[in-house]
Length: 460
Image (cartoon, rainbow, N blue to C red; front, side, top):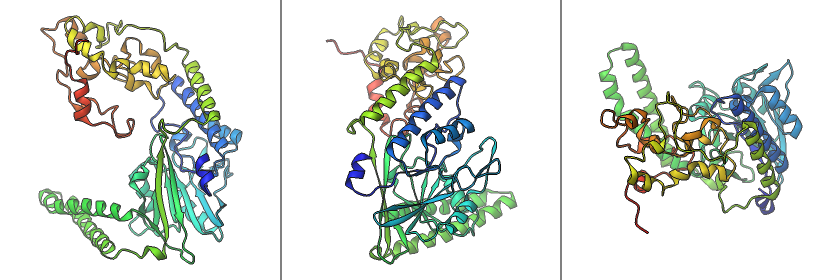
């Protein structure tokens, strides 16, 4: 962000769902750790000089008072046109920012239940806020919608929904910048990527006298959408023929007509592309926050302190050595050391892989007791008989035999009579953690599986 500001005019906007994960907290310790990390994020936003932000459903799970306290403490520029608490609007609906000689009208809404407050209709609030902005060069809405379905419901909840008068929408669904921008009901939607691993940049090019916007790269999105619609349309006749219920048959026939209409519209758009020289242009790109982006000193210190606070919230010592053996005999898991007696070569090969050091990799970066991280670095997390939080990992540490082959206490006790539940695991065993999001899309089944398949390790 510092380098971007040195390069030219920049506004810093946040579309919501940034303070807390979208998955529910699993314990009081997990909730306390989330609040620690929310404090880190809020302090970082304040230090960065964020210009405007929205709050989404997951943010409010930290607790209404906790969130409002964070906002007040760090003077965060929250916009929430549809939020009312005790009969008052705690945050303004919009603000006008100036950058490079242009006036940018920014509107924010919130989504999800907010304990003790009322959350009104987001579309109506945005429409009213647009009218109250006054003359601006571009209208940007911050909408913490967390999925494509939520985006579409906001953009056009009914077939004849009127456009909102918003040029650009920044949403919270984690859509990568590589996907470009897409158009819904007269507005262009963009995301910055998932899990805070990217910073998204939305570049706006103004053409004097133009009030029309176009998203660069939209034609690729239209082609993909057209292919998808054609596939759906081609299958409708078969679905209609196989449906006996007349009501369902009627709805399918209506859906087929809608598909046909949208296909014709997209075909016309692609046949007659707009003259971009006469239109304002939107382009989105992103920077991955990988090792090649050096840590900013003040931010690194805040992260260090937050990691220490997360560990303190757990009351545990993650570096303490614990054998990979599950002592609880009621658990269906036995632990990897119970397998070594019969599977020495397999265990020796496994010991050369990153799976054998999965938990230590978290210890090294002070994240082993973080409830949001531990589950993919241990065995059986969240499953019956497995660890339910990072404080109960004990003999489950690392991605052991049973992570891929299933709980095996019965097999270890009587190998001849009891088989493991997954003697030959496939890629589906991997994708709970290597899900394309947590590993940023790096998982390739063929190359990854070849690294963990059991072979006797080479002799030194």
